Amino acid sequence: MSGPGTTRTGTLPHARPDQASAGKATTAATAAGTVTTAATAATAADTVTAAADLPWAEELRGRTVVVKFGGNAMVDPALHRTFAQDVVELWHAGLRPVVVHGGGPQISAMLDRLDLEVRFEAGLRVTTPETMDVVRMVLTGQVQRELVGALNAHGPFAVGLSGEDAHTMTAVRRPAWVDGEPVDIGLVGEVVAVETAAVRALLEAGRIPVVSPVARGEDGEVYNVNADLAASALAVALGADRLVVLTDVEGLYADWPRSTEIIGRLTAGELDALLPDLASGMLPKMEGCLRAVRAGVRAARVVDGRVPHALLGGVFAADGPGTTVVPDPERETAPAPVPASPSEEDDA
Image (cartoon, rainbow, N blue to C red; front, side, top):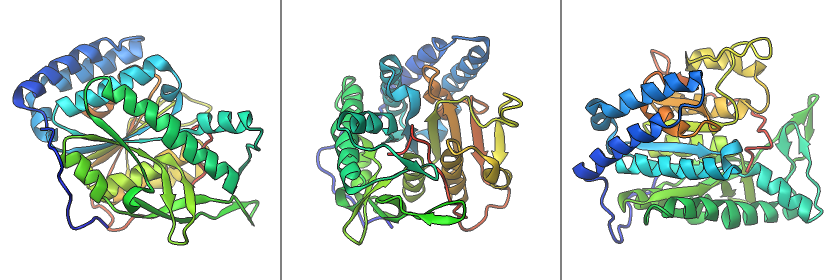
């Protein structure tokens, strides 16, 4: 799916040894500052240990990490800032972060302001042509600009692009059903192809790509794409080492609502068996993780974005916070798509 090569303009070098050391020290310090409860204290300690050890730096240096940014962290200014700090820390540590963002709450707020209908069917936002205009305006003109600005407060790092740009994402119209009957949800898309040339060019130039989940179809239409699934598709196409999804819960609950116990780790096969019973808000996140690890991503983790610096633990800690999905011992050769029902907070 990727292009034959990339165009290199000016080069911003990846982390030099002294940068990596500084990044490691700052990572440990910021992680230590995340202790807000007894539960997060252990997580922070694990993160500090992981960040202080040389092996993680050697193992992850030069690897691509795709991060899906959404949920409460997007609308909380303090969490927005710490997320940006974390992404820059990953860059300083020698990793190659790529950010895919959602924007459901912001889209709904703008639709309300414009007196346009906010409606969902089968858990999916009904996207009329008028709604699609708002989706594009909010995602690429507001949410992406704010995130790029937060990252670039630390230096000339981030560059924003849409899935439309350079045919980065191609989508087809996504079907939906209610009570066994098909329903028209409009311009909601499913990513069927990813062209990575533009993103790879930015990574090779030492930049941090920030991608809005809007895709163009071969039919000429522009589609609203769920950010969780867009991040998963991009992680697969880039050959990412891992996918980290920030959300508004601690992870995947073992027996919700009867228990708040979090499943810390499970294989693709174990997750596949659980998917039919998941709530609509969690389904696209876990489906994205499943698709990613079944298509070559080494690990996918869902973490609580309400915890400051949760991203660092999600990347560095071996047994860190949230829920980690890993491939089956004998990885299946092809992904098994499962219809998903995105939640409002994270649909693009």
